[in-house]
Each structure stands twice: as structure tokens, then as C-alpha cells.
Image 1 (cartoon, chains in turn red, yellow):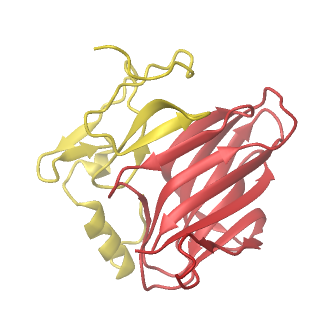
Image 2 (cartoon, rainbow over the protein chains, first blue to last red):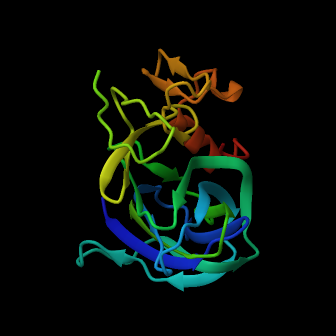
Length: 148
Length: 92
């Protein structure tokens, strides 16, 4: 099982994607086991509601090359993107996790073994970190760790 | 039972799960457990007094999210396989 990391940043807002992990092929299932969310903006009391949402069309964002946690591993089969997205299709109501965080806090969700968020082995299947609503527009920094 | 979590969630009163599917940490402190539906993969924080009705699948021996579509036993792995084959049109 190979493990990878991807990070990205984007401003919070209404129904905006911060980062997303999408399948480039249909060979393996991707299992996201660790999600970290924080902010690098100047400290302020802004609250943002997030959701992890499934999707079927990755669209175009700003790419981040996933980093293999074991340097001997080959490149990841996941496309990790951040920022402003175009042409993305998210599945309505397919939310795998909701949470809300104050900008001053750093949030982390860690899955127990076999309870990861699973991406099916289908090209362009994705899970996106969505900012559903926010009282401001702070930068949201997020890191996903996953295994393939 | 004593409260196992650090209180940073205000009025929200998370319950410690016997078999949590994950953990939530705020600023490095363990503040809540999460549970995952055996049928759709949805993850939630069990909260005392939330009013949400969840389920339990005797075949999967695990919790379900309470959505009517998850009342019938159809393990998430089976749904993934059907989705990959195009039999299932979408994942919840």
C-alpha cells in the first residue's frame, strides 16, 4: 500500500472547492485517511462550514504534485488540485463528512484502519473539500493523506 | 462515564464511540470520535441529544447513518464494485 500527501490553499466562501483529490485512472481505489484544515491568514474570528463531497468530473484547478511518503514509491495515481475550479461536477448531497471550524483553529480528522474515505476505481471520481459557507474569506490550507 | 474529550466544541456534546471509525482533533487535542456508515461510507460525529436516528446492521456488524437508502444491507464495498462496473449510477 503506497501513501501520498497533497496540500493546497484557497479562500473560503460560499460553495467553493478548496482542494480535491481525483482519480486519473480506473486501476486502484484511493483511501483518504487523514485530513488537516487550517488557515494562514491573519488571526481573526471567522467561521467556515466545510464538507467533503463526492464528484464525478474533476474539472480544472491548480495542480499540486502529490508527494510519496516513501520516496521509493512511484508517482501517485491521484490528481490533486487546489484553488478556483472550472468544469467540475460534484454529486448532490454526496457528503462524506461535515464540520465547521473557526479560522483560529486547526482541524484534523484521522480515520481508523478500514474506515477511510474511499474513492472508487473510476476515472475522475473525486472527493473535494468544500467551503459550504463562511463568515469571511480567509485562506484555507488543507492537506490530504491517502493510500493507493 | 467521565467525559473523555477536551471541551472546545461549545454546547456540542460528543459521545465517545466504542468502536470509532476515526478521531477529530482541534489544535492537537482529541475532541470527538467519528463513526462511519457501513452502507454508504458517510462519516459523522455522534452527539448526545442530536435527535438523529442512526441504525445498526446486524450483517455488517456496524452502524448505519439512518438514511432510508441505508436501511437495507448493501455493504459499501459492494456499492463501490457496482459503481465501478456502471451498475450503480452514483455513490451517496
